[in-house]
Length: 445
Image (cartoon, rainbow, N blue to C red; front, side, top):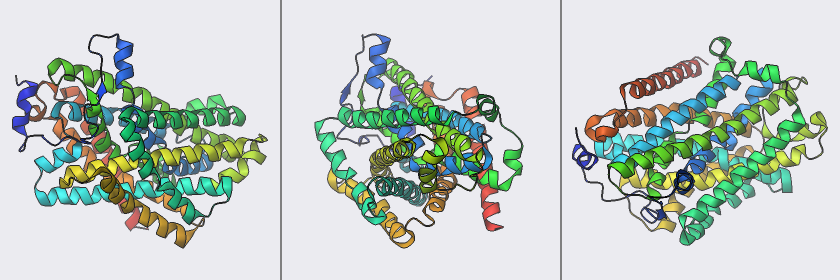
């Protein structure tokens, strides 16, 4: 049986260039402390990844799903979250065992043309995701302060400077900012759920899947959008990189511990993300579907209707604050994901500020153009479309991830078990099948 140290022989190149080299192994892990201390040392990357599962793109799809179909699509949110927990576990394994992120692994394994195509697809997905995030933040700034959308998009670009400043202070400061914003979002939606008073029996029934989800084309379109918004392809690249920021022994025992605690970290964080996504859908179902406002498809519509429908004076303002925190949080992690993808696929080494500026501009420029051309009109449809694009790209990230982590040549004793590999391939098949069906529906009009 091969040892972890022998696994690098299965890769064509030795992994000397670490992901996010300025942060590699900078967070100490107590090897002889309690389980709680170890879990706290590994806590952080999970929340940074979970941010991508509660971005403004999720808001658009969840609001549309809840307003149109009540609690029915709650089961889709749950299933998508379970898939996300599994796939993020595989991303952790790849980063810890192979000591390379998913982009580096793809560049090492595939030919240059294939790697380049995968990079282009990933950049498109990141641009689509960032489009949702910056537009979501811009909408929140517009609702709260009356700032025009174009200026709001430009303001969100300052996250580049924020990342650079916090990383000079230490990786933990960046994680603390993300965690603070995540818990602010959670507190906002706890208030919204209490104010909306959802029907508990109907909510529980919504957690059980129904055949109508697949049969109804409109429901299926929103469902695939929820899948694309929940299981984020760029998060697989990001997680496999940031898990390497922990300073643990790079031997069998150290890697086993890292996988165990990093998986616990991401699972807890993603369960919190499930609460946020479910809360958005439940809020829409309880507030709009049951009151006859099934045509609510946009964030602005939801903002305007929440206070009069619920009779809670702070409902709309709290909703907008959570949206702003969500959008800004997502742009922080999206920028880091862009850096990981560009460095990993292209092996480009630039100074941190220039790397982040380039990856940020790739997404900011299209967002400014869209905001200038469409304004508030049609923006929410673009948000949902961006999540469908993410879902379509998901297959090209998931298949290599499952392939690499199931290979005993590449992972040694850490390779996926038969049960885990089979489950992962079933999840992959579901994603590919749904995306293929969606493409057929799109081309058939």
